[in-house]
Image (cartoon, rainbow, N blue to C red; front, side):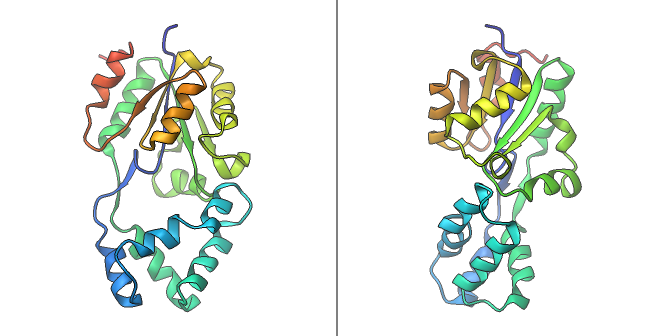
Length: 204
């Protein structure tokens, strides 16, 4: 069937960490190993709960501070430094605008806390780029659970084989393909336009 919708992941696709120096500085300050801060912040059971909507964003960060033995007063600076090397991919933003102009529906399907919606609206001002935004915390399930793919396809009113899903995690790609969607395993600096064109998506 003809492709009608292109669905994007957020972290690792639209938003990527290009400079981890802020994280490394905090690891030195805290006396922990390289990569340990990412494990605590985004590799813990508390983060899974936040992504499933079982823990508020603030409670999750309080748990991070407790895990690191960090005074609550230092938490805002840790958050700022942790994310300071993250950059929105403006080329992908332009691509999404072109997809919409060409008549394709666009969606965002992300495993994240409910706070992501505010970030998309207020900080990044890209919420309106998408016909549908589905965040795992708001539906209680995470990719690659089939319910996550079903939620966004139902909201977009397209069949699985009428959609393309773009994600950086192999497990999420496999889940989308098992659900009947076309999928592209995203890697930084890949030619996404060409990959979409191979699936019949034409924007020029």
